[in-house]
Amino acid sequence: MAFFNKLDRPVFLKEESDVTDYISRLKALQNVAKGAVRETIDREIKFSSIGEFGENNIAFELKNSGMPMYILRDIHLESGDLTAQIDFIVVTRKMTFVIECKNLIGDIEIDNKGNFIRNYVFNGKRIREGIYSPITQNQRHLQVLKQILKDAKTSTLMKTLFCKFYNNFFKSIVVLANPKTLLNAKNAKKEIQEKVIRADQLIQYIKDVYNNSKSPEDNDKDLKARAERLLKLHTPNKSDYAKKYQEIISNMNTDNRAVCEGKPEIAQVMKGQTTVKKTRDKALLVQKLKSFRLEKCREENIKPYFIFNDKQMRDLIKKMPDSKASLLKVSGFGDVKVGKYGEEILGILDDFR
Image 1 (cartoon, rainbow, N blue to C red):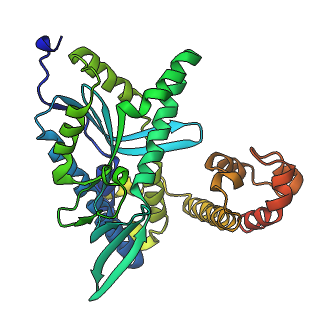
Image 2: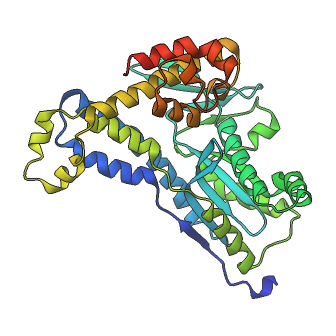
């Protein structure tokens, strides 16, 4: 019963973020890098810090909400070939909020078709440009979460009921974390307006949705159990940051390594980099294959994974086929796909043998 509930404040079950560690590692390299590598590191620190600052703003709002809730930050989910990196999951007694944080420079306009348009000034020029819809991005996150939770159900009936009521208990929110950003959504459809808010509106939004919900409230025990089940779905993943970091390391030249002598903390960062060329080549090959995939899916107006998904791409790189016959042995490549794309893919691989 609610009378016996003691939780009366927000609690972080996971508060750390991978980006914090990434920035720390970059700063360890910053003083020993030179030229273009130093510029790359400076740029990465700047952009990553902007994102971290935005997330910290949201974390601050949640911490000071005064609501009984459990908060999970920077959650990585995997379901087959699908992945999702969720900025925040907020578990309340009635429902769960999945939050996508955007710390954008400039003002945001949403038109009646749901397009996101950013307006800002750069070098004295007024820029107006479209950006990828964060609503669509967060909806994919919700779908991955839904698939994982559905797969955990033990019967067809439970799966059916779960899918039917999923949207009643999981809400998507896009939060603009930059306090200077103005949001103009007056021409957007109501269902779009309800999914995009500023950081200073977040807590009131959660309270309003919560109070309007007719769902029963969880007690302390059930609330914590729900939050802990979601936390267990997290699969620690730093591949994106590690890849960027490795590419930067790969470009560090001999002079940069020499500077590290006598500096154990920097030497440790540089340790194990004897396969620099191999790593650089692999990163370039991945880039080439992704570019090919993007070009083809745009030409044919199909999803990128119809060409090959990331798992199939990894198998492609691992096996490095040198003929159509050997390409057929790669995961996801049948006669039709090999006949259609084989020559071009083999041509890309030939440059990296």
